[in-house]
Length: 189
Ligand code: ADP
Ligand code: 5GP
Picture 1 (cartoon, rainbow, N blue to C red):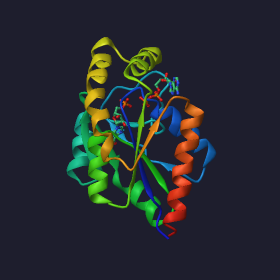
Picture 2 (picture 1 turned 30 degrees about the vertical axis):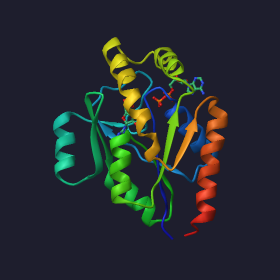
Picture 3 (picture 1 turned 180 degrees about the vertical axis):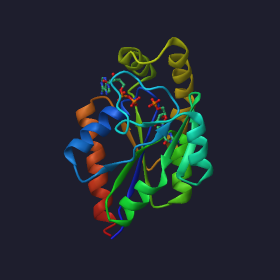
Picture 4 (picture 1 turned 90 degrees about the horizontal axis):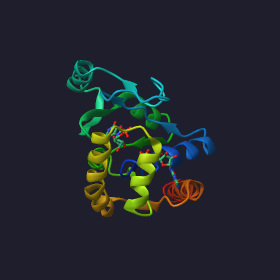
């Protein structure tokens, strides 16, 4: 019995992390793929929990050794999905959630056509800017880079199987849970 791969994408500040945390709390059997990244750690983040924070040469070595299922440059840093944990989870029948940018989502869909792609968007761009500012994690350059990228990211949402508007995080989490349950019913493994 194979597990499923569920990809969550959306512009920075849409609330992906917030919604995913709620879904994981409700479904302890669901696994979260922990990416490797070259971006600096934010305060409050933990090594091995939010990301594996690695220097660029380590990232390149992992990529060149084929240890990454997909990788991309996003907002000026490198991000990649370690291959083994995802393949092991799927082989052992556990569902695994990947939080990826739009390039990563496309790459996963090409490699694993049965993957479920979910796009999380904010109610409006004004909300997105307020949320990103409110989070207080980005310097002005990173903030404007993320806001500029949001237009292009939101345009790509038509490539996704499901779109969730994160107006209210609890409601959005329930919607994602419903998508997971629905997909399980339609594709029993
Ligand atoms: P992402 O992972 O998509 O970059 P986050 O989960 O970090 O986004 O959320 C960005 C900010 O918006 C955080 O400060 C978070 O607390 C807040 N936030 C998330 N969802 C909502 C919501 N539905 N309404 C208001 N604020 C939200
Ligand atoms: P952040 O710096 O805000 O944590 O993440 C920036 C962007 O990188 C987000 O869109 C996030 O989904 C994406 N991302 C995180 N990990 C990966 C990954 O392993 N691969 C890809 N392609 N994107 C990732």
